Image 1: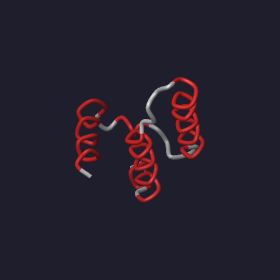
Image 2: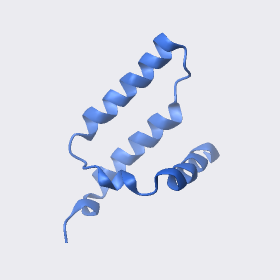
Image 3: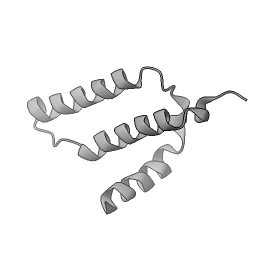
Image 4: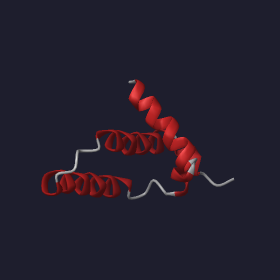
Length: 74
């Protein structure tokens, strides 16, 4: 659990709230495409599976679904 919190902190410093710039529409296709890319790099490219990236991306999708008010226009 500590590693997830550490990743969130690192990503917060690196990316800030740029994840809010992307619309929730189409996020399932984007997420599945990212996971396919990670798997291909793992399976064919001998790269480790970036599980924390998968978790982080899925968490962002979940937040977008749980808090649609973040994208409501004033």
